Length: 296
Ligand SMILES: [Cu+2]
Image (tube, rainbow, N blue to C red):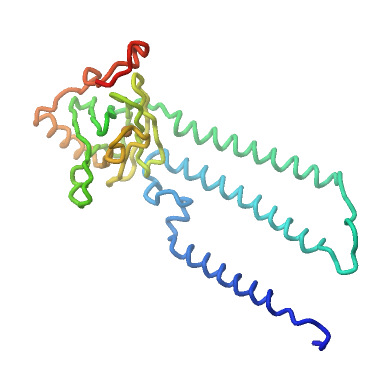
């Protein structure tokens, strides 16, 4: 019942309501822009689902981690809000509230739960890494990808053919995209991608494959996986490697084994037989770091 003595306090609560409505509408608008595919992969690139023999392990670990973190988050935020409301200062209260400490059940809860979480994250991570980064299945097809300022050489080792490229020269037109070097990979085949650099540190990154590897001068690293989904994927250098780093792009075409063979045959017919090896590396200063590091 309203009494004439009570102050009218419609101002702040009306504002809070309005802000709440705007907030809820904003969140709904944001989330409605995201499709089911985005949610399934935890907002990683949607085409990553089933793209390689590794991607689903990464997606599982990523989504599992978020779900565990959000459950902990909601429980914590819920308890926090509950405390704020249930133990708020009442009108008649003065001074500090009764201080509580050493509540055994609560102490045990927040010791045991994090330990369980850490153990869970640890084993899930080990499982994912063993199935992905530590995958060393011998490659049925071996491709050597060589990074250089600011393009790529692809040596199809098993097929004894090579492809060489120069930087893309982005000029703002769509045509620039046609000049992007293309890496062909056969689908459903054990692949070994060997990674080298001719000059500075580059990084081989196909976002949809959810894997990235640095290419370090004087060292060969490798990626072992199967490409499971035929299609076209974008790739790029992911290590700031100089002036035209942003033009160090490539495309990956995952095709059937027949198409792959036809492509590498065509390279050999053009005369691109063999391998563009370390003899084309621009510097070997990394072998003798104390004898001057000048670029040639
Ligand atoms: Cu680079």
